[in-house]
Length: 251
Image (cartoon, rainbow, N blue to C red):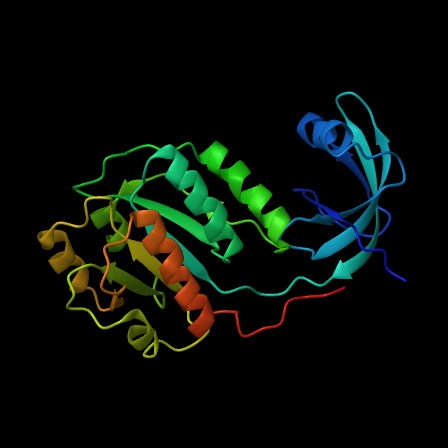
C-alpha cells in the first residue's frame, strides 16, 4: 500500500525508483529545522516532468541531506496552458497574486510594462520561491515560470500563434467574461491580460483590440484592484474553460 506523505517538495533533479536525491542547504534546513523530520520520514517529490514520487529521508545533516526515491504515486498529467499577463504591481500584492494564481493553475507569469505602470522591476527569484511554495501546498505537479518584464507592444508583437489573449477591460463595453469565454474552445492555449493599477490608456486599449488573437472581456460593475481582477478572471476561466471540471486527486 502506498504511504501518503504529508510533506511535498519540489526538486529539479530527475525522479525514478531507487534514485538517491541530494538536498541542498535550504531544503535540508526546511525538512530538519522547520518540519523537524527525521530519517525514515516519507515525503512527496515532484519536478514538473516525472509525476509525483514517494521518497524516504535517509539523512539530514547541517547543510545537506539525502532522500531515497521509492515509488511513483501520481502520474504527470497535462495542465491548462494558461498564462497570466500583467503589469507589475507593488511587492506585497504581487507576492499574493503569484501565490494565489499558482494555486489556480497558471502555467506562466508574463509581466509587461504599460504607460501607466508604477513598477518596472520585479524580483523573479523571490517570486519563483513564492510559486514553488504555492505549488507544493496546492498539490499541483508543476511550478509556473516567471519572466522578466518587457514592454507591452514588444510582447504583443511576438505573440505565439494559436494562443488566445483575454483582455480584461474596465470600459463597460466588453461582453461579460463568461460570455466572452464561451467563444473560446476548451483546451486552446490562452492568456489573461490585466492592466496596471491605473488602468490602460485608451490608446493602448485601441492598439490591443486590433490584434486578431484578442478576446475582450468585462469583469462586472465594480472597479477591481489589479490583483483582484487577475484572480477573479482566472477563477472564471478555470471554471468554464479550464480544469475545474475535474475531480481532485485523492491517493
